[in-house]
Length: 129
Image (cartoon, rainbow, N blue to C red; front, side):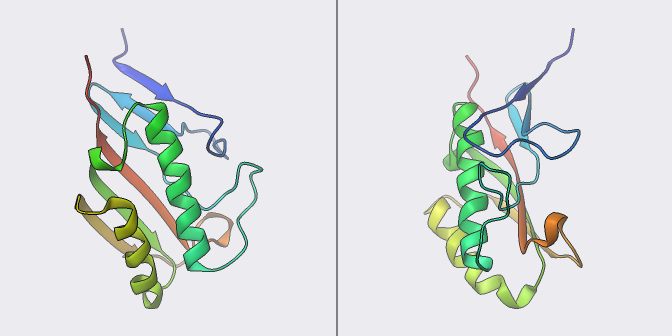
């Protein structure tokens, strides 16, 4: 019997490949990397600011579907196309987490799906019971 279950919500864009929005294993939720797609599946207009906000809106919807929020995040992995945009991304990132400071890695990458500027994935502690 599998201990894994998938989390899916129509409040975030559907996966654009053979993967789930998130997978729950015990009390840990692993989100797939979220890029700045709107519910219509299109990349949101704008730069790093608009795209980062959209990524967090998508992540918020997935976390809500699992019954948790940003305060439950243990680890974030951030992929950014241009480290020169780190300050703008970091300011937005901080606004979503407030005083909560999960572990984080930030990596500059050569290219992301759909040529977006940012992708973020999370590991989350989900209270089970």
